[in-house]
Amino acid sequence: MSINEKYFNAAMEKLEQRRSTNKIISEQRRSEIYEKIPEYRELSLHLAETGGKLVSLIMKGGDTAEGVSRLEKDNLDTQRCMSELLTKAGYPEDYLKPIYTCPVCKDKGTVNGKWCGCFRKLMLEEAARELNENSPLELSSFESFRLDYYSDLINPQMHISEREMMQRNFDTCRRYAEEFTLKSDGLLMTGATGLGKTHLSLAIAAKVLEKGFSVIYGSSPELMRLLEQEYYGKSDKDTMSALVGCDLLVLDDLGAEMDKPLYQSLLYEIINARICRGLPMIVSTNYSIVELQRRYQDKIFSRLAVLRQLAFVGSDNRRRAKTQRQQ
Ligand SMILES: [Zn+2]
View (spheres, helix red, strand yellow):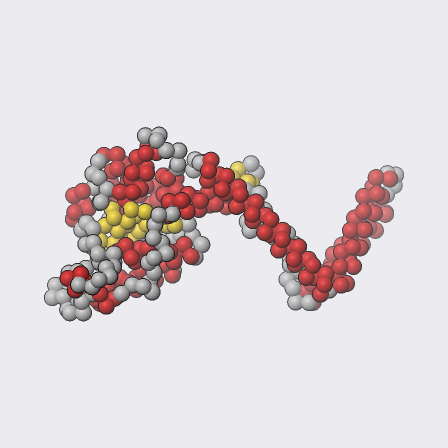
């Protein structure tokens, strides 16, 4: 992943916040224990003293082996007593150990001179936050989805009602969001405008985001325009890395972007890279499967075709009469 300076600085700032928050929590825990277990406090003072004695003994030089081993034993005994006091009072043994949000790099952001995964994740989150700024992520939820907008008359071709069909889509989407992991499959939502694809994909995005995953939600025309600017060097953002690396990508309105070769190759790059990394994506489109096949290169279509398809159906007539439209 290439590094955009802005995301880099934002990630650095978050690391600093983590370190200081964890330090505050540690200090609070320490005062709590000192107050509840005064004996613990005495022992920790004693421990500091032994440490000091050990240093001055070594500085003195000469034959210090016996003295050092005595002090070391004292040190170990004191530490054992202290941890016993903690556990006896019902605290975990590591309650006063340093707290790290990322134990791998101890919140330093690097391990052995390389960026830690947590740091890359922080940069991605920053990129996602920026891309999602204009998305109505908080507007659509599963709770606000209206099934009564769909006809309950049996559709003769499908042998079930549109409402029943939508209930199934709704259940699938909610389960998808609740059970989301990085190993989740992808979804392909097909169907005409106004049947609830955007609403449900936003609801999934919001729920998955709430679970702590990085999610990018964007419409295909908008994302293509952004990527095109970056492609021609008119912007120093790194949208491609974010789209390819986030935990879940929701690509809305595929097919609404202009039909041009650059967009086909950018789309291929995104879809292929995510599939190679095994990262899930949700694609929604007004196109039918047949239309998608006609519109996109085989290498794109074949990758879309492996996503789990959810067909959104409806005449839209009944719902058009309603003042509130469900996107
Ligand atoms: Zn880390």
